[in-house]
Image 1 (tube, rainbow, N blue to C red):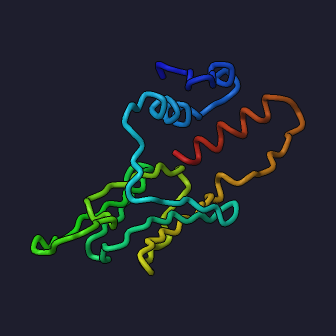
Image 2 (spheres, helix red, strand yellow; image 1 turned 60 degrees about the vertical axis):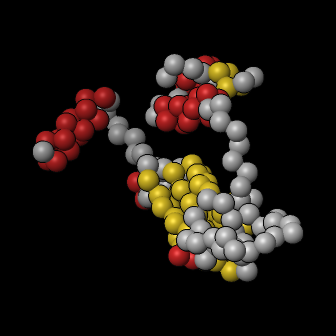
Length: 163
């Protein structure tokens, strides 16, 4: 991690008190380093339904289902669209419906998964669900009596059994 400063937010004081957040800090660093202009086409919403359910809505008027591709890879949801054909013989007095190719990327947490997509009335809706694995849920850790030797022996035996 080379940078720890995102604009006026300095993450350096948090680093000594966290473990395993390297990707989180790196993602913020990358956002700060990205000098690309914001991709505003097509317009989109990100809706939080509750703590574990989200919707990504894109206004894709003029695009059909077979002209839109949705995929996830390495923590990114990518939605892209490209018109199959454009009628060059049409003469427009005003052309306000955007039909240019697009690519929208939304970064996802490790536990967020795509649960489906639907296209209705020119709005593409992608449902996202935060699925927290059982091993990441809170669990009570029993305290062994008898000192550190008992804990270390117990841990060593579990390691030997797993090998």
